[in-house]
Length: 96
Image 1 (tube, rainbow, N blue to C red):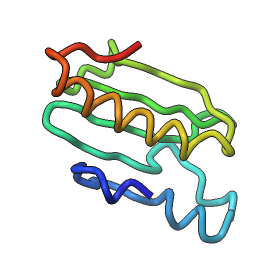
Image 2 (cartoon, rainbow, N blue to C red; image 1 turned 90 degrees about the horizontal axis):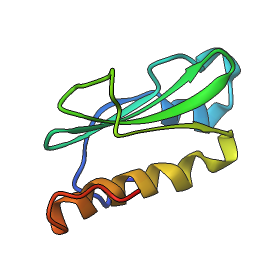
Image 3 (cartoon, one colour; image 1 turned 90 degrees about the vertical axis):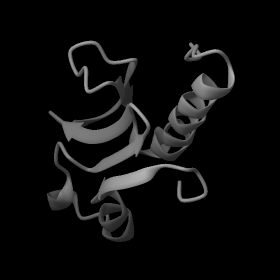
Image 4 (spheres, helix red, strand yellow; image 1 turned 180 degrees about the horizontal axis):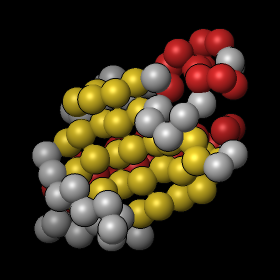
Protein backbone atom coordinates (compact mmCIF):
# COMPACT_ATOMS: atom_id res chain seq x y z
CA UNK A 1 0.00 0.00 0.00
CA UNK A 2 1.66 3.23 1.17
CA UNK A 3 4.29 1.80 3.46
CA UNK A 4 7.15 2.84 1.16
CA UNK A 5 6.33 6.48 1.92
CA UNK A 6 7.51 8.27 5.09
CA UNK A 7 4.01 8.51 6.55
CA UNK A 8 2.88 7.40 9.99
CA UNK A 9 -0.22 5.23 9.94
CA UNK A 10 -2.53 6.54 12.66
CA UNK A 11 -5.50 4.36 11.75
CA UNK A 12 -5.94 1.56 9.23
CA UNK A 13 -9.29 -0.18 9.03
CA UNK A 14 -9.08 0.18 5.24
CA UNK A 15 -6.78 -2.86 4.95
CA UNK A 16 -9.28 -5.06 6.78
CA UNK A 17 -12.01 -3.90 4.42
CA UNK A 18 -9.79 -4.59 1.38
CA UNK A 19 -9.13 -8.11 2.61
CA UNK A 20 -12.80 -8.97 3.14
CA UNK A 21 -14.92 -6.43 1.20
CA UNK A 22 -17.34 -6.76 4.09
CA UNK A 23 -19.52 -3.67 3.66
CA UNK A 24 -20.36 -3.68 7.37
CA UNK A 25 -16.78 -2.44 7.95
CA UNK A 26 -17.39 0.80 6.03
CA UNK A 27 -17.39 3.82 8.33
CA UNK A 28 -16.24 7.43 8.56
CA UNK A 29 -12.83 6.56 9.98
CA UNK A 30 -11.15 4.09 7.63
CA UNK A 31 -7.56 5.29 7.13
CA UNK A 32 -5.48 8.14 8.48
CA UNK A 33 -1.87 8.88 7.56
CA UNK A 34 0.29 11.65 9.00
CA UNK A 35 3.37 13.46 7.73
CA UNK A 36 4.58 16.56 9.55
CA UNK A 37 1.59 18.94 9.72
CA UNK A 38 -0.47 17.01 7.13
CA UNK A 39 -3.13 14.35 7.57
CA UNK A 40 -4.49 12.19 4.79
CA UNK A 41 -7.87 10.83 5.78
CA UNK A 42 -10.11 8.30 4.03
CA UNK A 43 -13.64 7.67 5.18
CA UNK A 44 -17.00 6.39 4.04
CA UNK A 45 -19.75 9.00 4.42
CA UNK A 46 -23.36 8.67 3.26
CA UNK A 47 -22.64 5.86 0.80
CA UNK A 48 -19.50 7.39 -0.71
CA UNK A 49 -15.79 7.48 -0.05
CA UNK A 50 -14.16 10.82 0.68
CA UNK A 51 -10.43 11.49 0.76
CA UNK A 52 -9.23 14.54 2.65
CA UNK A 53 -5.80 16.15 2.85
CA UNK A 54 -5.74 18.44 5.87
CA UNK A 55 -3.01 20.78 7.07
CA UNK A 56 -2.57 21.79 10.72
CA UNK A 57 -5.78 19.94 11.69
CA UNK A 58 -7.86 22.55 9.85
CA UNK A 59 -10.81 20.32 8.90
CA UNK A 60 -12.89 23.37 7.97
CA UNK A 61 -10.52 24.24 5.12
CA UNK A 62 -9.03 21.02 3.75
CA UNK A 63 -6.17 21.27 1.27
CA UNK A 64 -8.15 18.89 -0.89
CA UNK A 65 -11.35 16.91 -0.65
CA UNK A 66 -12.21 14.25 -3.22
CA UNK A 67 -15.26 12.06 -3.64
CA UNK A 68 -14.06 8.70 -4.92
CA UNK A 69 -15.25 5.43 -6.34
CA UNK A 70 -13.72 2.44 -4.59
CA UNK A 71 -11.62 1.49 -7.62
CA UNK A 72 -9.96 4.94 -7.61
CA UNK A 73 -8.96 5.02 -3.95
CA UNK A 74 -5.48 3.50 -4.06
CA UNK A 75 -4.37 5.69 -6.94
CA UNK A 76 -5.68 8.80 -5.20
CA UNK A 77 -4.12 7.84 -1.86
CA UNK A 78 -0.74 7.56 -3.54
CA UNK A 79 -1.28 10.88 -5.35
CA UNK A 80 -2.16 12.55 -2.05
CA UNK A 81 1.01 11.19 -0.44
CA UNK A 82 3.07 12.36 -3.40
CA UNK A 83 1.42 15.78 -3.16
CA UNK A 84 2.35 16.17 0.50
CA UNK A 85 5.95 15.13 -0.19
CA UNK A 86 6.08 17.48 -3.19
CA UNK A 87 5.10 20.32 -0.84
CA UNK A 88 8.33 19.87 1.12
CA UNK A 89 10.51 19.63 -1.95
CA UNK A 90 9.08 22.63 -3.83
CA UNK A 91 8.99 25.73 -1.67
CA UNK A 92 5.95 24.75 0.36
CA UNK A 93 3.53 24.80 -2.57
CA UNK A 94 0.95 22.03 -2.60
CA UNK A 95 0.26 20.84 -6.19
CA UNK A 96 -3.21 21.45 -7.62
